[in-house]
Image (cartoon, rainbow, N blue to C red; front, side, top):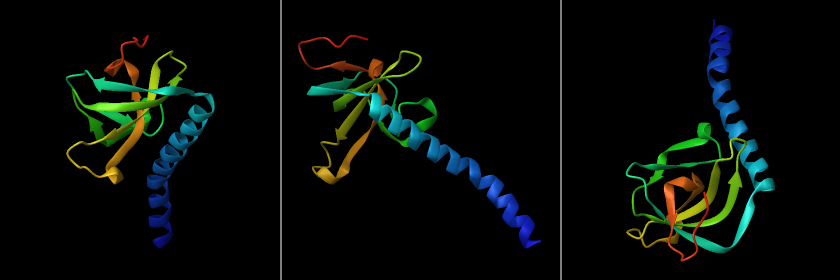
Length: 124
């Protein structure tokens, strides 16, 4: 009986580990192909909906409890273009209400959900 329970549990848990490993691997591949931004971009969220962070530039790697909202400011450090030609940016968000650098949030977001605060336009 215990053996059957362990087998069922392993079958239920294995997709979770596969998901984590695949997002980790996707992030490593993105890191190898990303283009670093030399003068960091200051971006502001323009979507009226939550903009979720991702652990890797892929929809399935969404971090369900980590997001920014309209008018939040982030700093972009690198750009990655996926196979669908969608631009992702690796950003850092520091909540101005927290005043603590330990509360920095990092992750991938879609560039189309932001606008630049610099005078030079970012091309989509």
